[in-house]
Image 1 (tube, one colour):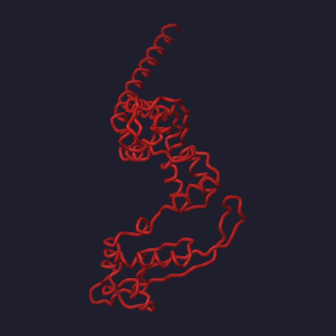
Image 2 (cartoon, one colour):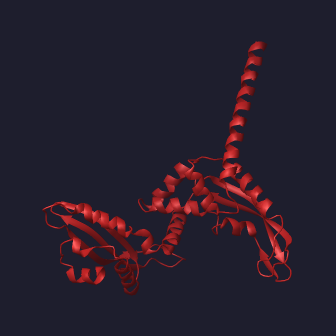
Image 3 (cartoon, one colour):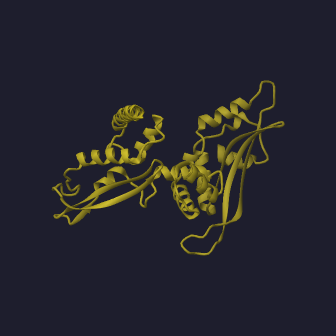
Length: 293
């Protein structure tokens, strides 16, 4: 009986050593990848994913990030006057990422000459206000663009353990959408030109390029305690029509007024996305001429 216990302890110790050996190797690998304060928290997380590191202990990330920041900001100079700032106090930060909760002590520095306070850790990591960080916002927006907000919250809880309310999903998605520019969400001109060229068949009539623009009144969600309201969502859809075949080229819609909508159309025109000479005329010929010339 004693021999069996001794043998069990032997293998347990062996597994223990093997585990910590593997963890040390992983720690060293992650430590070399993370570049703080050279890159923001979001950029570091994106870099980790590029290296196929999808599941990491947030305590490991905390230890690496906090130690590298301590090394860099052992002292701090005022960016205005250049004088050395005095260490004032520390604030406990709890941030939510797609790797879990990362907690660390963030020091405050004060410049007595300028009478200003600085929190260099927050600036170096470019943290988003609030606990949910930009990597969470990115995945929330991706999922919420395809499924309802309540389902988005369920999916992110099952996949990442994030306890998000529908209101938080709405807030994160809307915040990102407010900063999105049309040129960031539309395909590049080369991509659109390739789609059009692939639709052209020898000895066949040129495909018809359909450019449709329209608007519709839509109910909006409650914001800032105000009651729901109806607002007009304007949008466009561009597609190629070749007999029975239809090829999607571009689509976009957003709540906006006619002046902003006009500026979006002007931007599309300036990007020279469509080669009118490669396609057949459409019932929107005059409109296309104005947009695509």
